[in-house]
Image (cartoon, rainbow, N blue to C red; front, side, top):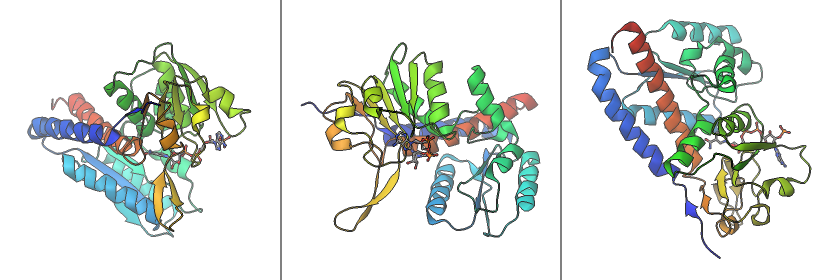
Length: 294
Ligand code: NDP
């Protein structure tokens, strides 16, 4: 048995953050302000709070100003729509995102629709998803864009390869499949209604697991020499009663079959945050160019 090479998202994310820091330092004086990102959070879901803190910490590290707002659980749809409308107009703000999940009385999709597409740092607005479908420039969804960036860093070629994406969510699976297609892979999308998942994943030169089920992908489902990307983030309690994060793949056994593999944590999670920062800086530079400041 051989052991797969690790696709190290943590290290690459740090490298991207350093590049963004340098880029911001270079242009900030000319533009007259730093880039700005507004993360909106409603209620006090502890996992969401941790994600938001992490995003704000990463912003601070690279020199992006945070315009985050934390709203009480009972905040109304109208209040949030008004906040988004104000942020759309705010010249200090280049990126806006709504941290999910939202309390049940709120309509997340409707809020997403209110965000100015060119400030849609998560790349999930229908206009940006439409641009992805059409192969036009636009803000790309952070998680799948992070996967693509990680594969590119390790010079993994996708052209003509069989790629299988397990999961079809609008957040991960669908945009992931479109990006792999854009890179000339032959793409199959599997989901909860797919029959005989193993016979599908066994064909994959590139396998992306994004189902949110710990241990869904086992070594017998992986083609020897495949590139296996684990997007899943699942909190499980181990035999000792300790809580820890695992992905969707059986890491230890697949590491003996695959050529490349991503760890959880330290794989796609940090890449997602890096691409969020990058989207914010992209909007910042774009706005500056349009206004003639650059
Ligand atoms: P969703 O729950 O929205 O989607 C899960 C997808 O997996 C669905 O399309 C579902 O199919 C499919 N699925 C469920 N069960 C099976 C099965 N047995 N076989 C095949 N497909 C199945 O999750 P998300 O896409 O939002 O997230 C997926 C995972 O990625 C989660 O663990 C999440 O925490 C993680 N994540 C990680 C991020 C990161 O930064 N690394 C960012 C975002 C998410 P169907 O459509 O038929 O229901």
